[in-house]
Image 1 (tube, rainbow, N blue to C red):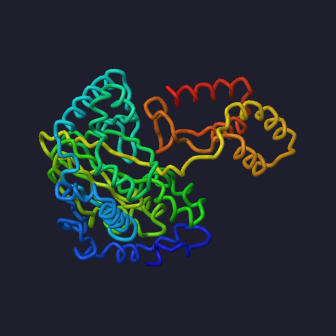
Image 2: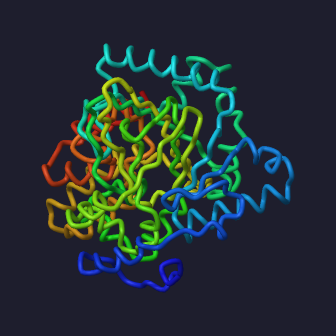
Image 3: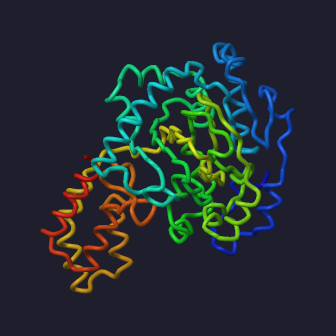
Length: 393
């Protein structure tokens, strides 16, 4: 399909968004013949019986064939796969759930877990950096949990080897409202205006950098609000702008699908797929999922740079050049882009939460604010030190 080729040049803007085109694209149907390893296809989601497929994962050629099928679904087809029985041993799930509930209780007392993505803060329980907290709290249980060849295969199918695992637990209590439709990290966490500044090819490439997953830690019937999905929506080129549009959100709400899950099931989807956590209108189900956000090994710079030291050294000169009129705002912005860290991630979302948006302030943002407000160097140094403490705490 043309949407899978890098024929787009220039930039996407709001005029690039055509709802009728989006409707046609998301009206496709997934055929069982295109997913021969699947046990069933439900609402355009291929369902894979991992009990039946475990021996497939042990055979190198058969495993590669299965991973190729998954990769094709995630990239060129409906964009989502469901692994039934990904965790065959529910005691591993229950042990992890107990750890997560204790962390939630402890953090609720301490006031951590503030800020959330695409949902009001406090509408659910969120554990940021659940991966590290799980490992440090119960190392043995953590090892048993992630010694999971089905999960590893799904990650490798999209990202190849050497991927980087992160996780954030989400527990939605009865009455918890649905999220708004969105795409995910990276461009999905930017505002529409910021996303429009990235060239079109970056919009098409960004989804290849991460994979989204969710492990069900309890049975999730429809009334508990399992994730709402819009199959094939990851194919829409301008989707990182479109999902901000109320018309697209309304269409998503009208046409999205949900599939019930059982404890131990896992769902993986392309981060560009339009999706949203559903509303929990049950009376007694505390819907808990371990949200896996897996990144490509290739999303790293070549050299380790102390950009805080660079920022502190350069700032007095930037301020003086600005005050003398030697550099324009555009000149200063270009210099800041080479000096400060321009991206807010990775960070510690417990202490540096995305309040007021989906991303905290970056180092470069702070430099721009300092120059605009005429901060003293001392004030900038203190602010950078506090920011570094928040990110590393």
